[in-house]
Length: 343
Image (cartoon, rainbow, N blue to C red; front, side, top):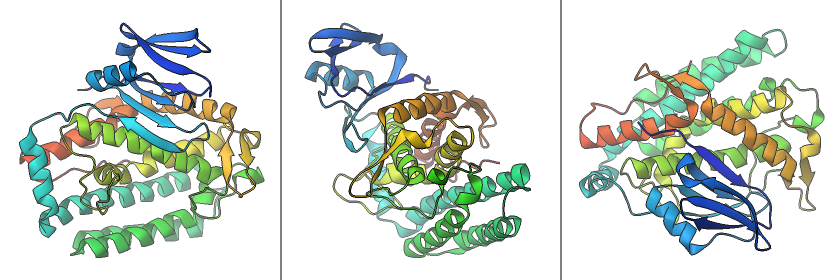
């Protein structure tokens, strides 16, 4: 099993990254500001304008370390990937499945079963833990509708109908998402999902950490020998990691949504950690981003029992385990892809 390493977040805009032997070195105006052994890292996410040396890019690609670049405000730019791993026949089988509607639907259906199931139990967990503080009737109504959606997913017969069911279920889930937020701070009122750009603090956090989760899923797929660009649910487009987006669907509610809600409810993040641009876009400040990334690392180290394998492991390993299970199914070692079903 893959070892869960750390993620290095480079948040200062003026740091340039280089490699020195087996270390990544951050320099500011030519002066060393810090160094970390590469063998301790799983990924490096840089929010600096200065970038990184070609030598470091090559070293990360060689060692399988995810190196991703963002603007200082959090917009994803690009990442570095080494040569594809695994048997080319596995990727060939993956591509063939996309041409077979029945096989493609079987995998996509399980991604969405996992997502809706996990959305339902996020709602149910809130009812259990905070029943006196939320609109119980609204929460129960959504939970029942998500249960109905699960039945519909199992019987749907096309990718288009599956997308429709998923869209309706997501709308129901987000209709009560504000109930999960127990803070009285008006800065954290959630009135619905919006993006490109996010127009409130909650959406700003969701968008950022969906991006983080997507990168983890894409890295996991590459490590399992699969092509993150060839998907089963999301339409293939140039430059779009369609399978990475597929695989993160079932993990969105339990990893990102619960993390964002906990960060607000536990006061990890404050209203002053955001700024509003003239366009209406809401962005995290450097301090807010640092606080959240520290908490995200802690979240990824927390232990959870995998529902299919019945083994305890850190949350951060779940995308890698799911990628391995998907590869086993595509190879023919499993009868079906087992989604991650949290409860």
